[in-house]
Length: 289
Image (tube, rainbow, N blue to C red; front, side, top):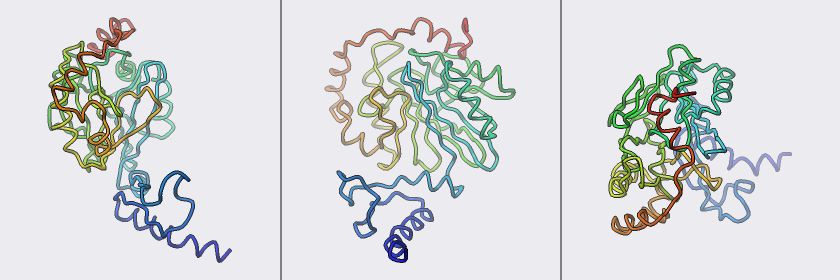
């Protein structure tokens, strides 16, 4: 038993140091076994800080949720002291699930915010407003949609001692925004920036040049370790980082002219629910629901 404890001491000490600093660091090769997969060199393993920071009360509670039909991610963030919470991109079909989780965790949902006016699903914001007294809806003022809070560049969505800062990132639609945590450790990019991809630009005020500019000026200027959480993923990926997307995104690492050519020639089918979803989402998800 003593020998096991002695072998773990360096790793435990390093973990405690990470928790007190709150930063991501590469794991040094001397800390011992059990902290990597067999295919990863020790020097390449990155520890994500938000889990330990959350436990220490330095960062917000965070939960990523998934809706399988539209492959939509919904994100729940909360302040563990005040119990105030924010929900990003709720989906109509998963409102019951989200409400149950919020109730179980004794959170008070303050705001439900959409990163843009979605075309592939109906937002759950309208039903949430009907069932949670005092909850506010939020969306960009450029979206053309109705909401309690109309968001602009630099606005802050506060929940307890935490907040999200609004960065306007049009291109997929006029009303797309990216929501960034106060410490710039997480960015919720909607459809503007996906993992190794981006939102389409062939309908709903889409403009390839504007999207390219939005990503490079408003998202790629964030710290490279900032975690990227998109509104959708179709390949089972859950997150990326700004640094990864700067290096490996097959579209947005090209020149603007190459990017425009790629987007022009995607030839994607029309979203199946667009004729229902867009009118509903312009009215906060209450249209014929």
